[in-house]
Length: 383
Image (cartoon, rainbow, N blue to C red; front, side, top):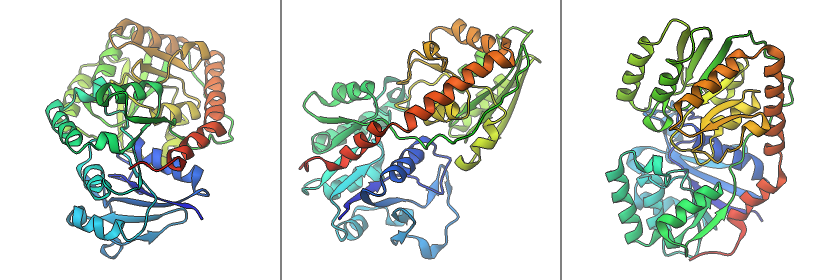
């Protein structure tokens, strides 16, 4: 008999604009579906918009190929309905895919808090210094309520990197239970990449939500200072999460010099990313914090090295020809990295491309990572 696992997540497929968390769970289910009986509770929405689902498919369990799922409209995202649908299923494990979620972490936790069921919570990078600095008062209040109910002691924390485990212990103490299991990625496709690249020209891209945390405005400020002998095509891919911030980005774009060309293509469904990234060279993402960064792995899987901040688990990239990880305080190093890639010819860039695909393939097919993720659900029950 497969162990019965409930996953609570704010957004799930066919939603895609909410980004990495959706892919984290989709990949987890895909890699371990033969070991667990997954039930997914989610909203009938994507980021700031409703999903186009028929009314008859809402608020009831539906069977998909690899899991069962219930899409809940706002009226049914409450404690009383959760008791009705969750307690009838005899789940052995419940997994919460967020920390700061009232409807899909806090309320379900209240339902299960005193039950002898294994409770696993993924903070998803939300305890990082950069993440906590955004809307800090709201997050401090949430953490106060969380601690008041002793929820931090009632869950097993799923850390995706050593740095995230340290963040959990920093905020909740050394006594809380933490398991390390890196996020699973989709398998790297068996394909040969050939990316022609003109000398002194580069196709950069930004792939993430347009929000303060992801630091697009800072990326644009780097581009403004790239030497005029380099031609840069910069493609912005992702949903507008914070409209005021996007307005600031648009103002900066309007001021960029002529050798920097910017295009915004909006949010792209995950299955269409391959087509877009086939013509791109390098990811530019000076993020304030990532606990994993699915877009980084997706860049490597598409033969694109990266220029990222040092606020992710991915470090010492230059030694492996995967790109650059640079402190946000060192603007000049970001600009030099952009110019270095721009200056490359096709042959030099190809060596970097091949290194990224080789690394991504080894990482995504590592059986140890799958076993670490299974262990989240298989160890002894916590009360």
